[in-house]
Length: 173
Image 1 (cartoon, rainbow, N blue to C red):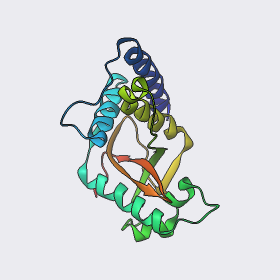
Image 2 (cartoon, one colour; image 1 turned 180 degrees about the vertical axis):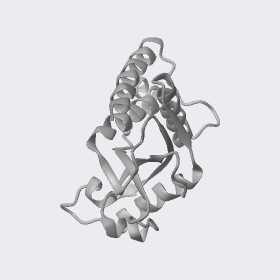
Image 3 (spheres, helix red, strand yellow; image 1 turned 30 degrees about the horizontal axis):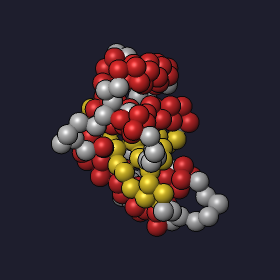
Image 4 (cartoon, one colour; image 1 turned 60 degrees about the vertical axis):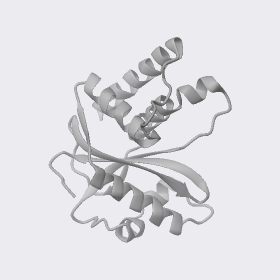
């Protein structure tokens, strides 16, 4: 958990750096999802940790979004939906055998060019800050600086969200 707080501090510094030099724009040929994942991996590296992107976990995160959208009801938060055992089971997660730490943020639409140039960095920062909420699906093993990660973007209840999931490196789907 302390590593995530350190990563959040680095993310804030990174955002400040990009705002000073104006170089946070999305690179040609890289999707928003890939760009955010690269930022998260780089931030973990700067803090002495290691995030390894696993496309299988992208599929798990996407399945969670799809099932959370199906289960969407007014009065339930997105966090409640994504961490619900029934939603997890419908997404193919055996909550008795596997688990993931999770972070979620809205995929904001900005009006200004400055914010749009830095959008992915800002969203990565929101995902890092969200790790302090201790959102979990199933019973995840402790992540001690090394994690496999997946990311997905999709709509839940008509609003677009970005979901990051992480598992201890020893866990493989």
